[in-house]
Amino acid sequence: LVHGGAPIKMKDFRFLECFTNPGCNAKVQFMVRDTIEVFNPTAQEGAQIWVELGDLKGGYNKLRFPSGVRGHLLYLRFYESSTTARWSLYGIEISFQPVPEP
Image 1: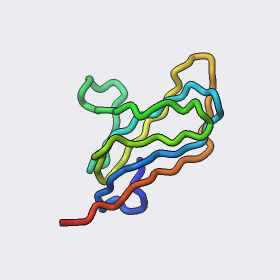
Image 2: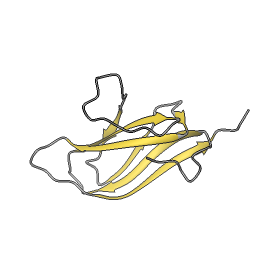
Image 3: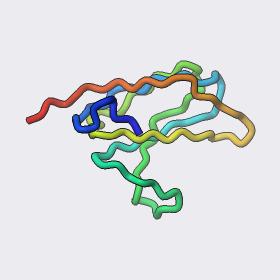
């Protein structure tokens, strides 16, 4: 769960930058919500809508969020797509712009 130090403020998410071990098969997904949610891994499809952001095999990874991804809270889900390779997350930064209140 990422709120950027301001969970009440609406944000326009821009980039996810992170360091992983080069050559790993990890991937990252995101979901933006305006409330805190408890996740059920066995929930029916459609209950939780995760969007694929990209793979993390480059070591240094800079991934752009799709245009118009706005919300108060950003949820991230990292997963390994290989059963034989291991991966490590060494650092992460999320870039966003606060959305002015109307």
